[in-house]
Length: 104
Image (cartoon, rainbow, N blue to C red; front, side):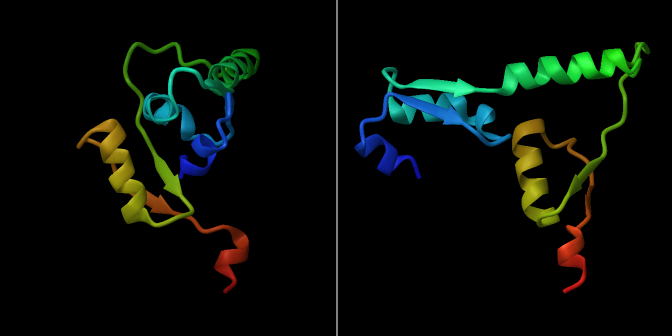
């Protein structure tokens, strides 16, 4: 996947998908230390926090909340990734197709 970019000797990669920040370490390893990785992950997290705070939606409780996982893709593949990143306690996945998929 990164091979063609490495062959082009790029100096900067923009991580433009939501899951790429999870792969920063391996992407950096494959591309080499000379390649700059640009990610919007931290800025996005900061903006989400600000939006939640401004809407008075920050959870002030000291207890952990519940997780609910919803995916438009395969529940099985989503669960496998969830377990890989979050551990075996990863919960059940609910499948909700996009409206255009539901009609077919």
